[in-house]
Length: 181
Image (cartoon, rainbow, N blue to C red):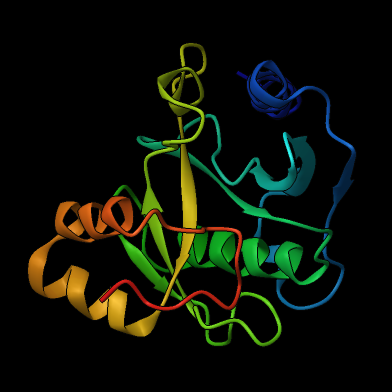
């Protein structure tokens, strides 16, 4: 599959869940030349929130193709940079996957309590979003978490942390939320 067709398939997969993108963005600073030339962040309206989603973080020849998304209550320009940095790490550092956590190096939003991300199943959108059939790509949720939550996950596992989220009725859109541990 050629790159243009790959990018179109990714966008079409997102569109089935969230409708067409509101906009597409690509950073022009930093080592973005090390990312695939068609990499961009698509912004979608998802119910009462915005969804920022990578497009072409995966490439046609990847063994385990992966795209990530995260959600915010309002427009947040810093999320394009955040997803670009995570995509860069995935492409040039270590391959990411389900259950991995990443250090954002700063709060995910200005003043937020969470400065890490957990790569999780797309619980809010279900299995229809998680996998595309052709090309075979996995679409996962990059969920902002606190340092204490990341340490709990390392000690007790992803499932135990997600159980805590469920018990606490995690307000995933609240950048000032308390840690669930």
